[in-house]
Image 1 (tube, rainbow, N blue to C red):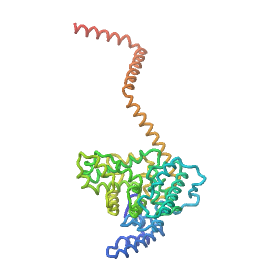
Image 2: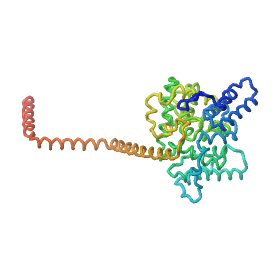
Image 3: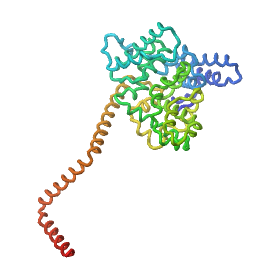
Image 4: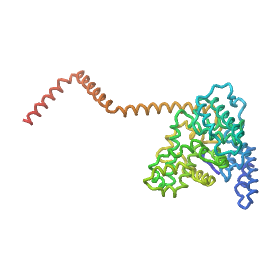
Length: 412
């Protein structure tokens, strides 16, 4: 599959690419077991040769990476931590100052693993302990990151797939390169992400867009904020979806929600116009059953037909230049942690400037009457001083006196 902003293909086809395209995608005549076996071999070969384009194709095709042992090979490559030098390793959580949000972390960890996996109380307790350690290790290594509720849903998927030792660096990379906008001091950037959804729908399905025009896209916040980990209840589904999301640039998660909305077109159009609450409720819930492979295919098509730069109303221009949606577009380029941290601080500065501006504008609006009266008084006072300095006060008074006499003459 060709992707915008991906590496340009060379003239020589790699062995991994030959296998994936010949064996993984042209198996309509094969038995399912033969298809699966060949795809497994293709995934292993793509990981061995670090063939990123082949991995993207395999992650997008039906079933994704199929099973966790293959994800343990592929995800580190997609998250760019499989070849980290020892100096890049995270420091242990012990001996590091606690993060400011650890109290909330523990509250969320206590209610984690609700839907999966099925295990004994002892095993569940052990998993919660590991989950807590991974989150704290990442936050203590990068204390500027702000924890958000639902972050633990993402981390628990990484933990179940990769295990504790690999999930910590994976979560660090994920947080800095893909979730950074959601871990700023404000969720304002996340709201800007959501504004892309109505723009995508307006371009792809104008009639549906008109029907949804009175509804703000906040219905998608929970799903997009947590990479759908908070809303999907089947482990096999969320692991498969992560295959896709990790293989594509972050904005594709937004396109996926737009695809979900468009897929429910008939259902949404049948909701009465006088029931906006029902419309919002329906939009905020994922459909059951969830046809993940079909929705992934639709999301990719939407992304190709209507790339972010082409969306109407200037929504892409309003995404900050330091947003993950703009800084992590080409997955073939090495993304450095130091650069991501710098982007974080640049975005924080921009947020503070925007918040100060909003507060100032709000102050002016709330006190507009008082400010208007004071402004008029200042203007009159300034004009009086200017008139006196120019020696025009006597002339103006003379004209005013003539006008007064003429006006009285007309009355009487």
